[in-house]
Image 1 (cartoon, rainbow, N blue to C red):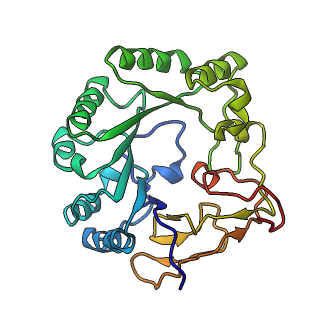
Image 2 (tube, helix red, strand yellow):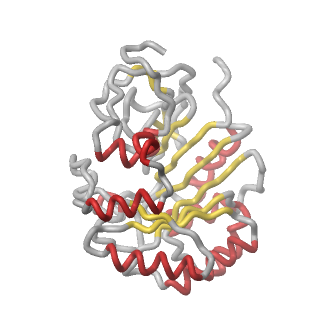
Length: 289
């Protein structure tokens, strides 16, 4: 088999259990309906991925990843490796002792601050630990048109404490076949792009801009999802991307895994997932590189 592309990017969504109940988050992402593997089984699958590649960027997402004790088991079996970057996407709600114990294993923490569930003081305490342990962090502020001013207030308070944050636009009826954003006003969108310091001529390059203005059509293009990046779902199944194109490649817990080495022809009408959109695409359609 040909050598796999490295460093490879991996996104693993291993749980839909969450200790928050945000109104803009669909049940499929937070209901806890998925039966999680035993912690030792998860740790074994985690080590399979961890030891497969000499270098990678592994993003752990949910649900709330830190709510699953299997993650603790997995972290207890590994040592920090500069070539193996672990990125944790979290609501930062785990107790301070958890962060003191495991933060040093992380390369970056992406924190989503949810207005009605997390105290700002707890978030600041977590950020202080991450800073002390030299862990990069990025704060996202999910924002709806209704609570726009409330989130801007939080953003200003964080900046007063020396922490930069990024506004995050949200879908309405996410996961139900509706890939449209909430109906943000033109003023709100202009604020959003200005806050991200995006020049007007660079807007078409942004994922959010592509989604809003339907510029995310890659049907017939070659896509390197599965070669330069892949995803793992809540049941341990591996796919090229969240679009599911090409079917399962295997399972981290049970099956033999077949790793692709060549790009695939996109057969989807729209590429809507942010991680999938980051996969390299050909400039020309219908199989031309």
